[in-house]
Length: 300
Length: 333
Image 1 (tube, rainbow over the protein chains, first blue to last red):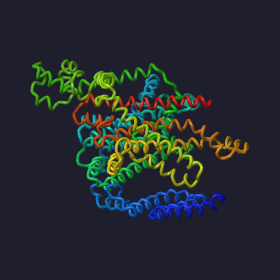
Image 2 (cartoon, rainbow over the protein chains, first blue to last red):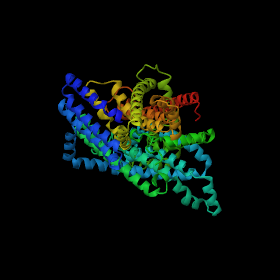
Image 3 (cartoon, chains in turn yellow, green):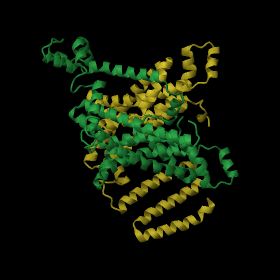
């Protein structure tokens, strides 16, 4: 790092001079980028806990600022790329609409579908686990299904269940079912022979073994499926709205706003979707840490 | 926790995760149970056709002056499909699998449509599913190559530069929890408005979706050599480039292939969803959309099955390449 540190500023300055000759407007952009990069380089070298938090934050903020500056300097029209401040303005101005869309898509469509899909997949997994034959048939099929473009069933399910949230929930059920199923079945077999033998020496029956050994041991796998499914649920609910929805919902607003070239509104909805997705994931991940406190990766 | 940073692409609508896929493969494939499950699913599908299509079956029968219960059309309208099928088991079962626009087409109807639109028409025709599949696949492959290439480059940077690791990696992981595919319509429209159309906008979405699995998988893979192996190369006085080419890169291949399989599936979803919002005229997504506009359920199902076959072929092709490459390198799966 130290050997690199000396030629690096010289090279950076040289690049700036060259760029100034070609395109003067790009200079502040590149200068800011280099400054932030240097700051991060310095922080990364220090390797403290706060540095590890600060570096990605600085990176993110820098990208936002550069985005803003680029839009201003090059006068990028709002129908191509709105500036972050414009998006923030649209976001705050339309809070009520965005909240309505959030409730329609996330609370009604995604959450209900997620609950139904995960619970039924869990039930089927428990059933399949009792029969080795069923298990060895369902696992490859489920793993295969999990790689398929299941969002494609959206037009069919919208046709069957109507335009409201029921059809979105149905798409979500179809999307989350197989990942949760495969993960749960995989998790339920994730015990060692020694552990199972111990349960047998205790005279534990099927249910005792299941609740005291195999289900807890399966939890890392189960939560892997549950976490993946959080994002899948949101996608299913949003994409299904492209095929028909009431006049509310994230996907509905995205497709309508794209048609009106109101890209600040589209970006606002993307912010909503991103926040909802990360929050949902974060909540499940937090529950996971509580449930699987015993796992090596949680005992740092 | 298992896949941390996790090797999957839920942001693209793909539920496959690398670790579980490897786990399933390690158990081996037993043909008989799989066939049984598939047969059971098909049987369930056929069975479901009867109540799903019962309303249409019974209405057709009533028009043909066959006695049905209940007699009046108004009474029938308020009944569910299951109740109608139970009230008229014979009528419902007889014509459940032969309707032109069923709510749920039977598997053989979908198969016949698939056969009719692939084998019986010329592949260049507008009606040919092969034509539509190729339109989607070409965008998928272009985007997949671009996205994976960039992902591998970024992963190499992340592994070798601490500052890149610290600044980019958290965002790469967070981005997996964001429903990225929701922005597909916007990308298409924006690129269209600046004059880019055709295959490229779809490829951009595909590239974006296959980018993060490649980054995450490659970072994991390039870091998989342990201290001992790295120390060994140091005792050989191996340069950084030699360490990369002879140790890190070969060691990363199993991870790379796991993420390639997820990436190609994600790319395909990206290309299909990319065809939805713009009213594209060709492609599997366009077939889905056209089918849903005109109520051509058989066409929708055929497009869906075609997409599934395409995904299976693409993932399978990467599996074959994986097997060949890894066995050439002397790595056993």
